[in-house]
Length: 69
Image (cartoon, rainbow, N blue to C red):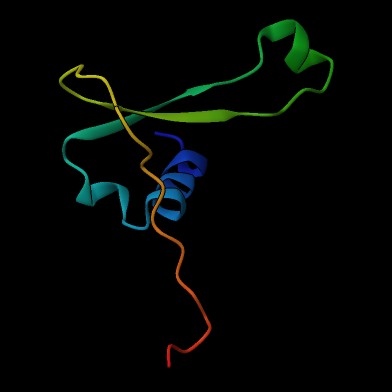
C-alpha cells in the first residue's frame, strides 16, 4: 500500500481511505529507465472495487473560511 496515495486519497476525498469500502486506489510510477534517470513522480487514481465506472468527481467540496451572514 502506498502511504503517499493513502494520504492523497484522504486529502482529495475529504475522508480517510478506510471510510470508503467501495473504493480502492492504484498508482502509476516511472518505468525502470525513467526511474534510473531520476524521475520520481507517482500518480494515484481511485476506482470502484466492483468495476462500475466513476461518473463524477470524488473531490470533497471546498470549505469556505468566510463566515456566512
